Figure 1 (spheres, rainbow, N blue to C red):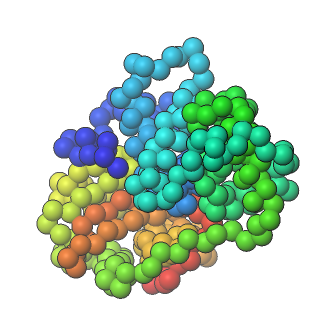
Figure 2 (cartoon, rainbow, N blue to C red):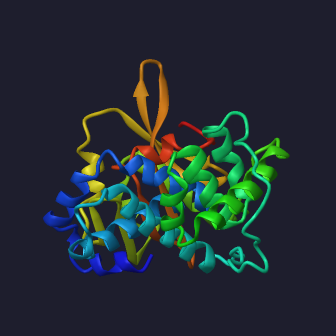
Amino acid sequence: MDDLRDLETSGPFEARYLAFLETITQLRPRLHRYCSRMTGSVMDGEDVVQDALFEAYRKLDQYDDSRPLAPWLFRIAHNRCIDFLRRRGVRVEAETSAVSPEFVMPVDPPVGVGRAVEQLVISLPPKERACVLLKDVFDYTLEEIAELVSSTVGGVKAALSRGRMKLASSSEPVISRREVNPELSRLLHLYVERFNQRDWEGLRKLISADARLSVADRFSGSFDESPYLGNYERQTVAWRLAVAEVDGELAVVALRHHGDEWRPGSVARLQVRDQKIARIVDYAHCPWVVSAASSVAVAELF
């Protein structure tokens, strides 16, 4: 996520950028929902959204304010999703008419569009995935989709038909489970244990001297220069951390006390290098991330 590195030298995000984010508060969960289904991960999806929004912020002078804001942001986010998939090595569907004919017999949307479709589309090639999501979940017109994905109306119709045909024969969502890194698992459990004990000195021993921290919408920079631990220590609401599998990926969730039970309120992703925690990405200020997950399996509460 290269663009956000531009913010890492300043620590907290600048006030003008935060003001921009405030203007699109209502749109954020929809952008995240789209990017999550395109990338197959609620955390990757939010990372892509973060990059897309920073790009949009830098290009505000190019935005035609006589047109709706949402399609412009969706197009930037879509392009970021495609870049992400290319970097990850996923084969991007060929756009040529020789490979993808403009005419395909129309197929109606599968029964039970919405959440069910969202869980199945990860099995589709990127263009079909995007077209099905934008039409059957987000209800964009064919013309709007063509502009968003840099295609033609005929190309969108063809991708929709191919995607719907494949989904009609699908019955089970594709669960993307990442191979568990034993060192990551060990450090996550130690991290959670010491965090819950408020053992800040012991916690710092798990974190590398040059570790980076990203708190979505708030901070990006050096962990040592952040108020991260102090902010958690000062919280007045009851909370605990736990190791969990979030859509098949090992992560840390912050649990909030609701009545007699603890419920996941937010999620954080940790990266490990040389037996130390090298990067923390905390989505505490983006509650839609954990709520968009298909599954959150908490390994342990205490």
